[in-house]
Length: 201
Image 1 (cartoon, rainbow, N blue to C red):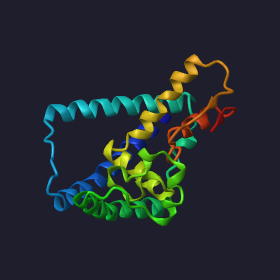
Image 2: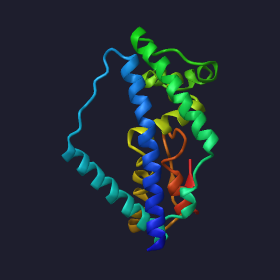
Image 3: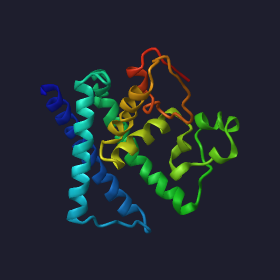
Image 4: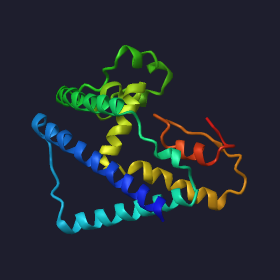
């Protein structure tokens, strides 16, 4: 019960952080983009969203306290690394807007350009006009952070929900997992920690 409460409060604080980070991102997009469209959320929709997030966090906390997955998955990253990457997201938003205006979706850094010929034509573009189009380590980390901002710090909890489902239906823990377009690998991290005899490619 104590673990449940501690974990749940940690998840709430984490969610509040990403909610706070979404505000300057939205304001910057409004300021930079002529085509920015905002969606007005009703009080009823907000209540539903809050209720669903609370439900998710309760289930996630319960899974931690009952040992479905280890507490090590909650270890926060370095504050310096997090802050530096968030500053990079704000800066990149400016370049994203400029690329959108110029309809430039084929510009890559030297690092990403080295791997361009190794991927299908479909991937040789800046998805969402983001720098390097997810083809570099920095781009993948930035995208992962942006996903957390978009989902208000709930995406890690949502990804972990696959673990209890697998544990219910998989008897043998020697899983052979292949992850395609893995990015930072955050989707399979809970699987690696929960099924320690598994092989992930």
